[in-house]
Length: 336
Image (cartoon, rainbow, N blue to C red; front, side, top):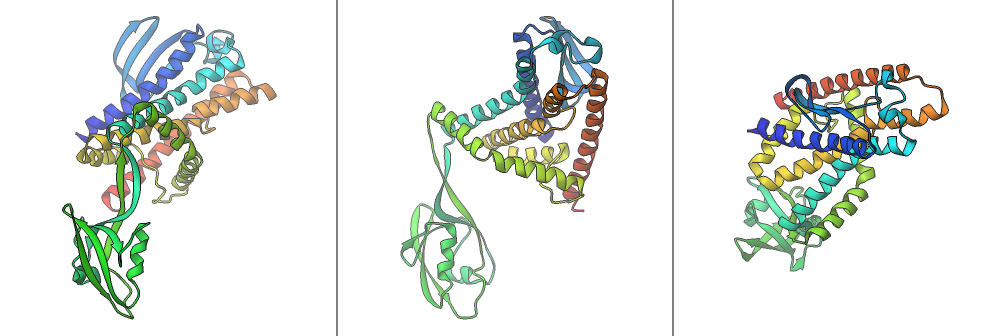
């Protein structure tokens, strides 16, 4: 089932991306010869609206074969567009992925709610024989207050680490329970694993859409740093690069499916934002690489044949990158 959900999520994300390129080209009167979900051998094809629609065997990408992109089509279609027209075609795929992510986030915010930290902490694990166990803490307890003072952040739990007897107010099964905890000089570990409690506030779809846009834009620079740092880590052989390939995403999809539908939607949001940022990187064969060469061609004389070679080399680099990431995914999954 993990593979099925993976194919659905990846297929939708690729379709939306390529649809952006298709629509931007067609709106400017440029013919799109073929539209494919996947690479490699063609499994299914149908001619409609002047375009051959394809489903191909390798579901790790897709393409819109826009007239004017090939060297032999110079002066036609895409190649005959103005600079703004070309930029519109190139950025439209990224824009569609971002819009899909915003729409899905808005749906989550309206159906599930906007996640907000309460300041309290949820107990995940209590270590056997620990101070926390002797005090009576249990997994799923929600720590509300220490010595009668409400928690403002989960780290306020550390206030118990002073010699003496402390009270812990916890929410357990809908009721508040007060526990006594004895801390003595020389103790170091409380013996509890916890995470922040998250509450959800449901909002309307339009407000959710605004929140989705503002939050993703605010975290944009951090996401770019994480992506670039992760890719550099992959190239350097760092097993903890944080970047996942197809194998890792399939495994993550399986875990998300077990957690429920909302978690699958969250994963789809993350994949679309990652796909948008990745495609904007100035690597030949990606949209960002094409945009870079578009501007360089205005400063230097770059022949279409030379540009085609650059994109071919970029495509080979991307294949190498996928192989390296897949190898790291397998190492993580196999515990190596």
